[in-house]
Image (tube, rainbow, N blue to C red; front, side, top):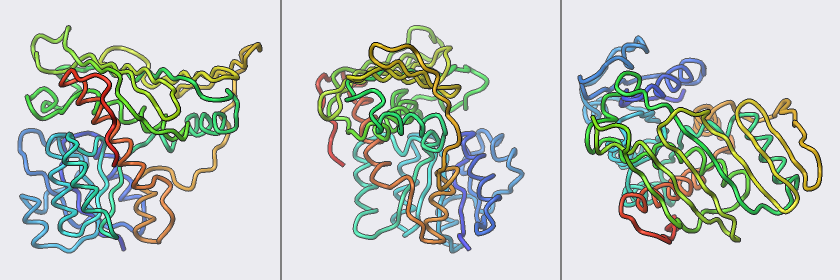
Amino acid sequence: MLRIALVGFRHGHMLSFVSMARALDYCEVVGVVEESDDDLSILERTELQRTHPTFDDLLADVGFDLVATAEYYAKRGSVIIKALEHGKHVITDKPLCTSIDELRTIKGLCDEGGPEVSMQLSMRFGAPYERMRKLVQGGAIGDFLAATTFGQHPLGYPDSRPGWYFEDGKHGGTINDILIHGADMLRYVTGREFERVVAAEAWNASLPEVPFFQVGAQCLLTMTGGPRVLADVSYMPGRSWQFFLTGTGGYLAVDSRGILLRPSGGADQEVEVGEIDLPFGSAFEDFASHLEHGTERFLPQEEVFRSQMAVLAAQRAADTGERDLPVPAI
C-alpha cells in the first residue's frame, strides 16, 4: 500500500490529487496538513480533516511514502526539499519551485538513487497533444523550424484565483506559473531542448490594484538546432493552449478541440485525434504505479527537471531584463 501525505491545500489542483488517491486501490491517505488558516476552502471541498498542524509534526509522527503538495508557489520548493531530506517521494502541482537554486537543490537530493519527484504536467496525458507528437515525430511537417504557443488564462481577480496570488512574494512570476505546460509539451513533441532565452517580458498594464502582479507575459526562446519558440502566457481572455508548429514540409495547428495540418503546397486537413494508447491517465497515476508496482515512468524525472529549468530561466530573464540568457543545464 502506498501511504500518502497531503500537504498544502493552496491551489485547486490539489483536488485532483485527492480524487486520484481515492480512486487507486493501492493508495492510502495517512496525513493531511494545511499550515495556514487564511483560506480553507479547498481543504473543505475535499471533506478531509487536518491530521497535524504542521508538516514537521506529520514527519515526526507518521510513516508514509509520498508527499502530494499544492502549496503556494514560493513555499512549494521548501516543502519539497524538506520531504526529500526525510527520504519521501514527492508529486507536486506545477510549478515545482520558483528559483533555479531550489531546483538544483531538489535535483541533488534526488540524484544517486534518492527519493523521486514528479509534477502534474497534465497535457502529456491528453490525446490531442499525444497525436501532435506522433505527427511531428512521424515527419508530418518535415524538419521542425519554429513554434508559436498561446497559453492565456483568465485572471479571475479577485474571486476565482487564490488570494495568495496577489500577495507580494508568493506567486513567483507568470512565466513560471503558466509556461511550464507549453515548454514541457514542446520539448516532448519535438525532442529538442531549450537552449537560450532571447528575450522575455512580464508586466502589469491592467491591474493597478496589485501593481507587482505580472498580468502580461511573453518570451522568445531558441531550441537545439536553431528553432525559435514564441510564447504568450498572459493572464487575459483567450482559448488556453494553442500550438502552431512550422516545418520544412508543412504547418500544424493544435488545441484541445482538434488538429489542423497544412502540408506544403497542399490543402488544410483536419486530423482526427482518435484513440491514444497511453499507459496511464495522469501524472499521479504514472508516479504512484511506479512507486508501488515498479512500472516504468511515462513522465521521467529528468523531463520534469529540464522543463522546469527552461521556464525558470525565462522567468529570470523577464525579472532581470537579461537578454540572450543561456538555459542552465540540469
